[in-house]
Amino acid sequence: MSTKVKSPDNLPNKPGVYIMRDETDTIIYIGKAKNLVKRVKSYFREKLDRPKTQILMSHFDSLEYIVTNSEKEALILEATLIKKHRPRYNVQLKDDKRYPYVKITSEQFPRLVITRNVTKEGIYYGPFTDVGSVKQTVKFLKSLFKIRTCRNMDGPCLNAQIDLCYAPCDGKISKEEYSEIINKIDLFFQGKYSTIVKNLKREMAEAAMNEEYEKAAVIRDQIASIEEIMEKQFVDLVDDDLDQDVIAIAPGKNEVVVIIMPIRNGKIVGRDDFLMSGSQYDSSSEVLFAFIQQYYGYNRHIPKQILLDEDIDDKELLEDWLSDLRGNKVHIKVPQKGVKLRLVKMARKNAEIIKHQKKKMENSLIELKKYLKLEKLPRVIEGYDISNISGKFAVGSKVSFKDGKPNKKMYKHFRMETPGPNDFAMMEELLTRRLKMVDRDPEPDLIVIDGGKGQLGMACGVLEKLNLTHIPIIGLAKEFEEVFVPNSKRPIIIPKNNKALHLLQQVRDESHRFAITYHRKLRSDDIQASSLDDIAGIGKKRKVALLKELGTIENIKKASVEDLAKIKGMNQKTAENVYNYYH
Image (cartoon, rainbow, N blue to C red; front, side, top):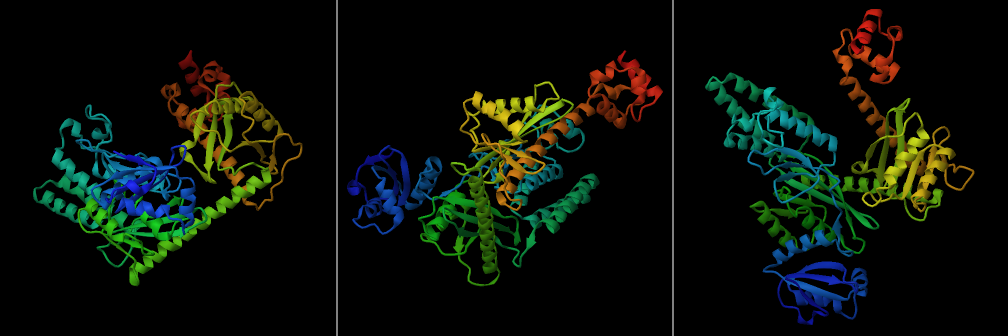
């Protein structure tokens, strides 16, 4: 229960959390204190040295506080409240939901799933920046350990029949045996491959001794697969007992790049990068403290050691809290020599590289704003394209770029309803359907369509109908890479080596790739599942040839024997088979 006050005079001499609000009652800052009255009074001095405190107090109107039993409890509560309210003047770990996690579910017979939503249930590993790699890893582990993939355990499925699942739904594996498999997966994500292999070798020996040779062979293959992963995937260090996270930062103008490199069993098992916002008035020590507090908040592996590139205040408080989470002592260190110092330097170098890349991307947005005379930076850019063959399997695509990078969770496919071929009308349908969704899919800062003045004119008509003419829109003509803008007869020519043009090309090309990929999938699905499969003499090549030439099954049905026989790859007999099948 919080207590609201206007000044710090009546605050207690106890640990807790204080919450500052402005005159609109919006939370602007959340802090923790070992002694509430002493800490909060420091904000009310006549002379405030720090720029951040001066700005914060210029907006201050009232505060409330929550008393806790200890400073450690205040630390935990502060992190929870910052994550919930995201106050303007707190240093914050930017939302990392864009990165997927691997989750072991909390069911009786757990599953292994990829998710972007972290809850209090289950065990989580991640976040992982390489989505493709994590998908391959999960697929590998599912096939290796034969755990269940079905949501509902309602009887043996196909996976059980082809020996890809131990079928706990059918009672073919006990809860204890299944738990042992889940423990191996847990060890895998902790990087303890040697422990897994050691346990598997013991199980293989026991199986061979009991003359369970099929089981022993399965375990032998599991060992070989894990040893192959060990050889290929990770960078070896000297000490096999290392269980560390290496953290380094690269301060920027408004944000700080943070790199974290997890090391398990003496092997670097990955690298993640994060942004800390609201950090322009904070020291490196405060940024590192806030990152550790928010990153390890819950459902993350806590290592034995955390290596930093510089020291932080209140280190002992963080160590105490992390030790509670881990179950044994955790140390935060700033190495001065040897392998650990080299690791910190490596992390710092990576952070600087990421910062430089982000700066280049920001520069490309600034250049784009300048060339297109936009009112604000186009942080969210959407690209659109249509793909079809003679109007068949017509699809539209929307791709989204945020801060110059693909934001794939905002991509969307559309099955076009406009009869074709009519690319103009299809693009009109695509834009109309997408822009009618601005209430649940916010409008972009810039729209890019593939085409010149004609396509742009049509697109501007859609914006007018929907009263969205305030959204900037351009057409990018492919032949000369000219940029067409509304109400201008002449295109804008952006130099070929300019980053702004490269970004527009990337958006245009990605929308084309996304559309054509979906179009090919629909064609492939139609080819793979059609009545042609039941006709004697029709294999995949002839099926493709027929559909390519005639477009649809309906057209094939209407074709004469003579027309069918003329198609490449067909002969008189097969043409008669097709004709007779449909007649």
